[in-house]
Length: 104
Image (cartoon, rainbow, N blue to C red; front, top):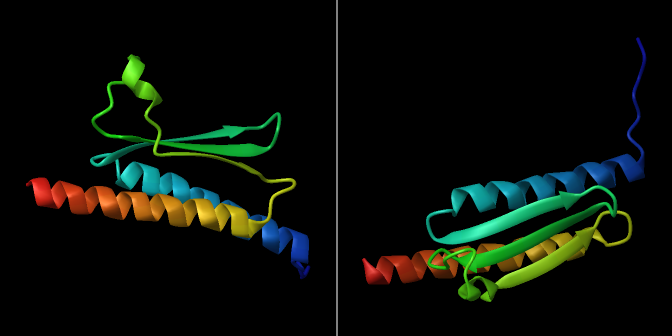
């Protein structure tokens, strides 16, 4: 039986990918209060995260009202940078949910 050893680099990559997937899941779960766009750009190995209020009419002049605009480069940024993006997104979602509850 062959034993597979995880290198530190492989472990780091798995952790970074898990955080990126968590951000994407949060984007899907918060669609009722925010419009979160995530895009992976393979040519630069980057994840872009853009957040808009759910009230924004995309394709209009108001679409420039971004609440968050971040890019994470997998090949050069540290996982703490990606965790910071996740934290900022989590805070925006919590705030949007609180505001939605107050209005309801």
